[in-house]
Structures are given as structure tokens and as C-alpha cells.
Length: 422
Image (cartoon, rainbow, N blue to C red; front, side, top):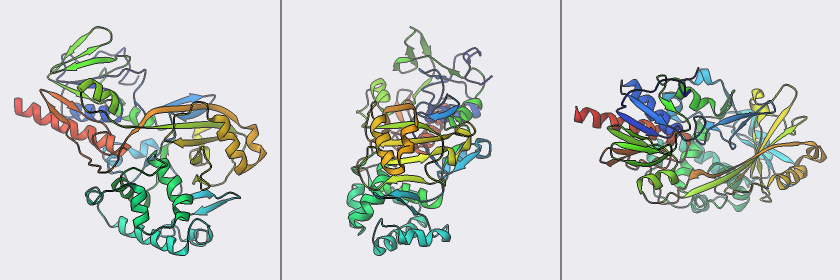
């Protein structure tokens, strides 16, 4: 049985309460538990993971929204057993639909065999492609912490300043980064643009064989039995206590709020956290509409989907044998009724076979990422005083890396407070 099963006995009088069993809360709780501290995690939902969860639907594994882990994120290797996750990697680069067909765009620095196809792809001028290659070389050699301290502006302004033409921007950079940052207008921080581009250049996008939910599940099963209480919604926090919807008042020396940004702001009276929504549409198909393991970008700007993945090409475990799983992402939008429009869009890409696809589910996540408008500053304070702490991707970078790092950083602050009060 998993450590987060409610039938297990919870710790007596914890030293710390963590509100929320998302990645940040689980990372925080595990570090506290590894240090020998008594901790309990209160989770409103029926499972761990927060926004990073997976479900089985008709034999398919559907993540709650299209999500990808970037293998170059240092916290993945620091906090997780990557071998046990059985990561399935996307190939670097993308397929780009330009109105008539999909063109292969790769990373010739890592895959020289992609050089000719990338040179021929009509996604930008030869000068664009040379500038992009030089930018990737520079970013590979730059520490991410340096990138997060560089002068900030919008991603759109940074792309223009780099000298890229509108052709490269509209056919490649906007659908790619608009999808990753959930911001098709490219108003997000150029610091985050640089950090993400570096992560793509030095690592791979990947999903666990069992779905993205395997990441929080691994963190949770490393906790002592009974640490996580599911179905326990916290309505209020105060120094030394948390009050639940069931009328309980749980006490501890320290309280950590590890929910998403809007909920944390409400519980702690913090300034509002901007939200970027996302909608993902899942389809079952009889056969893959495209070969290979690359993400597919909409280079036409017609939408509503900006990027598409034949996910069962990347991770066959996501689909029953002989079946294909396709996910289409509509970043920056909350559209529960978008599936017919997406299917019509993909029919223009891949023909009438798309008419036979079966719609499995549409995921709408109102708060899929916190905003990161310039000037963007990561590593916001986690210690709020009076024994209250906060962590989450809204306190660091809006990413899996940011959530895991924030949780670890917050746990270290709690441990320091415990040591100081001993």
C-alpha cells in the first residue's frame, strides 16, 4: 500500500504541517522526513500530485493536461530515481506544419543527420538558422543562474532584439515557446525564455512510462507511512495551526502552504498570483498520423492547438497495444468545448483519417502555470514569519524544476528554524 493511503496512522503531533501534496509540498515533506522531523501533509484532493497527475481512461494513460519533464532540470536528478521512472524521451527539435505538410527541424549539433532537413525546412531564413545555432551554443555554455539575472524584457522583445525574422518567430518560436510558457503572445519573461531554451538545448523532453503522475507518486511513497492525508481541505492557516473543512484544528510548530499560487495567496493573504490557463484535448486513433517522437508545431498560427504530440510514439505504454494516443495543447486558453475545432484543425494536417479519431477527454486547467511577466525574479522568500512558510512554482520558476526546488528550499528554511529553536 502507498504511504499516502488514508488508512495508515498519521504521525503524532507533527513538527510541521504541509498544506498541499503537489510536487513542492511532497519535496518539502520528504526533505523534512529525511532529516528525522515529524511532518504531516494535508491534501484536499483524492490523490497526490496537484497539477501533475495521470488517469487511466479506456486503457490509455492521460495526464491532466499535456506535460513534459525536461531532463536537464537539475532537481529531477537530485530528488528522483530517474531510472525507476523509465523516462521516455522526445527527440530534439520538432515537426512544423506550414500549411501543406510537416517539416522536420532538428538539432544538428546533437544529431548531424538532421542538418539537411533543418536547412530545407521553410521556417526561417538561412541567417535565422545561423543565429539560432549560435544562440544555442552560447546558452549551452551559460549557467542558468546567470540567465535569470540578465536584463529582462518580454520574450517577444528579446526575439526581435536577437534579429530573428517574423517567419522564424511565427512558424517556430511562437508555437514552441507559446506552448511551453502557455503564452502565445510571448509576453512572458525573456529570462525564462533563455532558461527554457537552454534546457531544451542541453537535455530532452520526457514523460515517465507510467505517466507524469509517477513523479509525485515516487515522492509520496518515499515518505513514512501515514504522512499524507487525502481529502483533507484546509480552509485557514495561522501560526502553529491549520483548520480543515471537517472542523479540525491541527497544530504544529511550523505550517508550510504548498498549494498553487492563487490558493496560497488566499490562505496567507499574499498578493494575487497571475494564472496562465491551458486546455488539452486527448484523442484515440487507429494509427499514428506522423512518425517519430517529435512534438508537432502549428506553424500557421491558425490554431486552436499550438502543439501536438503523438504520445504513444514517445511512450508506447500510454496506449493499449495496437492503438495510438494523440494530445493537442491549446495554451493560454480555457476552452472546454474546443475538441471539435481541434479535430477540424488536425484534419487539415493529416486528412480524413482524423474524422475517425475518438475524443477521450478535454482537460481545462485554469491555473496551469503562474505568470512570469518581466521583470521576473525567482527565489522569492519562503519564510513569512510567525512560523508560516510558503513554497511552490510561484516562489521560484514556473516549472517542475521550480516546484521541486522551491519545496526543497522551503524545507531547508524550516529545518533552520527548528535548529535555531532547539
